[in-house]
Image (cartoon, rainbow, N blue to C red):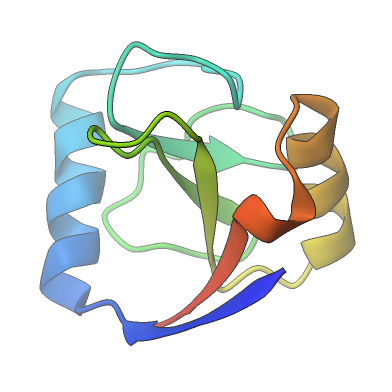
Length: 101
């Protein structure tokens, strides 16, 4: 797992959460392709429709200009569960990035 050193601004997080919220997404797996950004609650695997990220919240990002999927994790205290979940859907450990907000 890479320690993603670039910081994510709260405005960017708000924008992504707002994008998901406004589009009323429900459940998408880690290998889904309906959108560029996904919010997944790893306790019940449902999209987290909150304005601010909380624990167990994962920001899943599929780069538009890249063939490989990557997982970006925001402030979770259940990292092992998140990694196991992501790897079940085919992500390699090197594709998982811990974001510092």
